[in-house]
Length: 347
Image 1 (cartoon, rainbow, N blue to C red):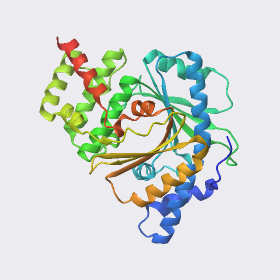
Image 2: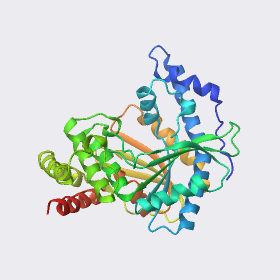
Image 3: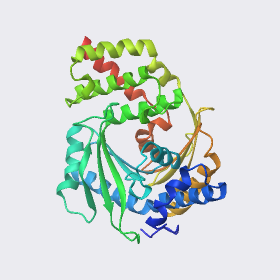
């Protein structure tokens, strides 16, 4: 794949961006220049991320896994800025998930098999070890999955770039999707620790129920409870909060007419206020144009918290629906799975 035409900022200039982006004393003109440099840095991750994306696709195919989904995404600039604010010591050039690949697999065994091909197999990209195994040690909020960071080598003149591979089961993925979707509905970023405590408890309990189903460790704060106690509290909280109804009722008017038949890129534009989703598709040969369009939309809507924009790559539109159901507010799998699990536990 040919390198992008976007100039790659030096790592030294990237290290200076934090103050220019986050300090109030910086002039508007300097902040705007810094914002454009940030976008250029983000876009420079497309090539390395695409290399890891295609390598992951090849490994999934060789393993013969059932119904795998592999997608690529570049981190949204509002998410990059929010992460810099949350982590005061973080430098932008060391942020590990500006470029990301996600593999969504059928079960825990498939997740472990795919990850093993990277840790035991031969490839030219350097692994940053140890990986973050949030399946064996779930995050306090209930998030689960394996995160493996790579220093991806290639034609970029910056000595390799960091790209993160996330590997999840379908149950783990539908949990993360529901967190994001309810965050849009409640106008709270639950995934970054914001929001009402009862909703956060709801997701801790639902994560524990999924862990029980997959026979994996549950979050530490709930390990003294029996499956029956977890299920009873979950059902009571769901009855109080009506999360299932909120998720099922947030329907979007989606144009089904555009079908992405071949692998390429899709720009999603979600308007949470109007409850509409629009998207623009690009063939792989127009990756530069896709990133330029992404940057233009982000600049236009950067002060509007109700607009969510992301550029992703996958196969056809059906794969994108499964990989990014939060953009289609498709949380049926989450609701269906939890109803079945609680019924089995409680009878």
